[in-house]
Structures are given as C-alpha cells and as structure tokens.
Image (cartoon, rainbow, N blue to C red; front, side, top):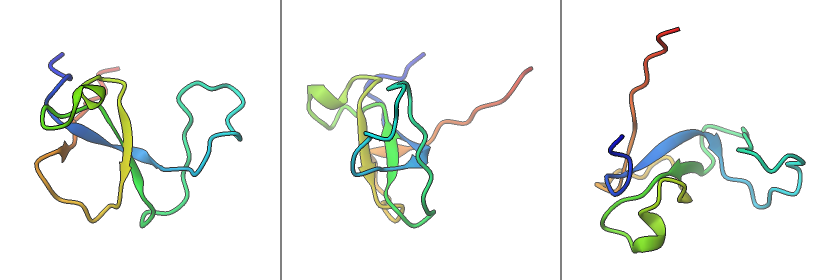
Length: 78
C-alpha cells in the first residue's frame, strides 16, 4: 500500500557485481559487509519512470542521506 513513488527503501542486502551465483533467480540475498553498497528497492517520484516501480532496484553507499531514500517499519504479527 502506498509503495509507488514515495521513496526507495533500504534493504538488508549488499549490492553484488553480478548475480550469476544466484541459481534460483528469485530475490537473492547477498550479505558482504555493513560498509559496502546496500540495495534500495521501490522508487521515488523525483526519479524517472523506470524508478517509480515497486520492483525498481538500485544501490547506494550506506552514508547516503537524502530525500530519495528511506525505510519502512515492519511489525511481525505472527
């Protein structure tokens, strides 16, 4: 709900130079180092239309602080 066009959201995983190691091709999780570039998913209205999709994927250094990237709070209700 309300995911498209708000901001890109930080993800747990780091960016990989390539994903040939991922045999399933389904939502790979690559963890290397806290300091390495991290994946952001979703999009921001300040980007072009390719980045406004919920499935948009990009990566940034963890030091980035701006109005294009945020996070989503999640509560496990199970």
